[in-house]
Image (cartoon, rainbow, N blue to C red; front, side, top):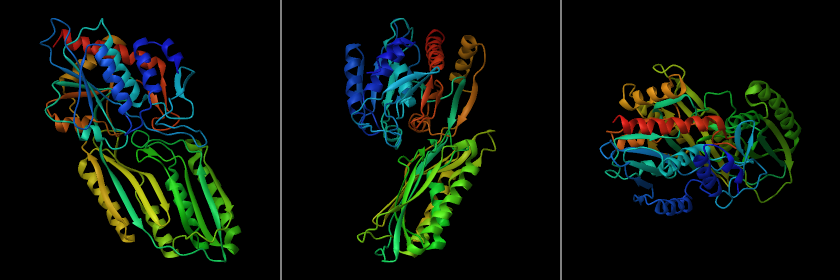
Length: 488
């Protein structure tokens, strides 16, 4: 499948990316790909091993005569975000990703593409295979479960890696190089809330909010995009004066993707149904005006449901308290950086919200350039949701990557960029979480930077990569590796 990728250049990179597209690899299900890469490494005569968590390392000896060069680690993550458009049937654990080219960009058919971080992984594999490359000792580090928990990096074995420099290939803007990133943590909220049987004088309505663009909860959080959970909770808040009781709710599927869709079933008095429909109709227009061209595809629909005597919505008090807590919860950009102009300092994404048979669950992702701000934001969630009797846990915390603008690796990258492309790169700090922060905490001696081709719409079915920038990325990567060998 995806035979057309073999016709793209650089050939080696796209051939390996085709393999990644054809091999299912959602977070937590990378085993098939790991085994495939181990078999490939064996055919190439490369040593390979795994740490206790399952992270994979491939090692290629230096070109003869370059054994004295400091070791270089090439790093990417094997997993991808599993998101599909509503109505598009796709089993991410079994089905390959179907791709197509349009207007100079590579897209996927109705799903995430996996260019994040598949193209970084493909470039590493191509580099290891390239017989013409001059290089010092190379280590390829492929981590697991980056998209869901940073688990691979967090559990990476210490005293395992041997290199002194590290290139992370998980950035998404050509012409830029990243030297710092936000840290973060998941805030997980759970509660069992009281319910009461549907009354004879009540009816049911289903609310559906769809059509949003979604996006990466770090890199896109500052953009004028709607968050489906934030918007549908606002609708529920407006329906409280008609005594609406929440029956169930489902919004978002990943804590690091801005939710594109949210759905809720509510119970309300029969004689208030027309008033509720009028409120939803008016709010639809209000929200569409507010979102404007930033998310012009939003649709909000209210549909009557067939009554059922076997359902138990939340009690009115519990429903009111839950909606109020969600309405008050931090969402979006909290603060811009005072030290790095144009960069978000602290944010939160209301990523996954659900309610089923009184069981409430929320998973939010807090990010900040300051670890102390992550702690403070998480504590705000704890303070808020404990008011409604919920249990709040802070999980999968990971440190930020403190920028080093004077690093030798950055100077070398800048020189190669100038020589190859005729201009200096833009040196950036990214609000998204790169694994560099965690890797640096385990291997503090590493000199690191991150770069990559241009990818847009990551973590959503709109994900796409600009083909011309992949060729530029590849040439820059090869130039830098050879420069580090010739001028250690």
